[in-house]
Image (tube, rainbow, N blue to C red; front, side):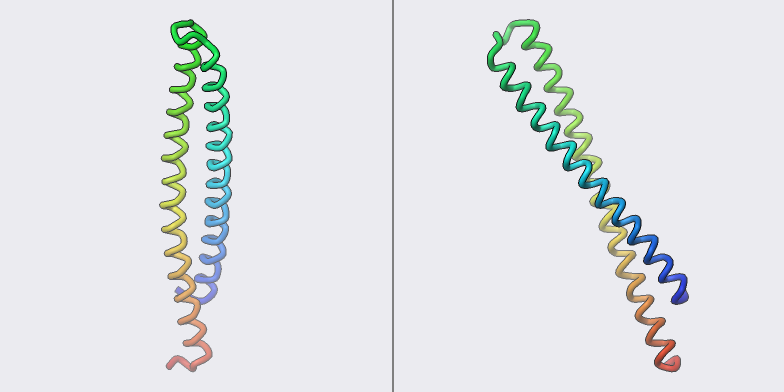
Length: 109
């Protein structure tokens, strides 16, 4: 891979890395909001009789929110895996760029 190609690839990878980091921030913020919602539901449910229809509806909603949280955790794990792969590829590109520069300025030695 030539110096220009490696530099272009590095730019693309950096862009992808930033996109993944942004998505991870969004997932973290969503999880935080979700946790607050669950806490609000728990505080409301504590005031209700556990056999009341409202309490049962809140319990079902809480269970659905836990499923959403699980999906967010899975999404975060995918993003983390992708980020590790991008960082490894970035490291490879950096090594390629360094080798090309050494070759270019070292006279091909």
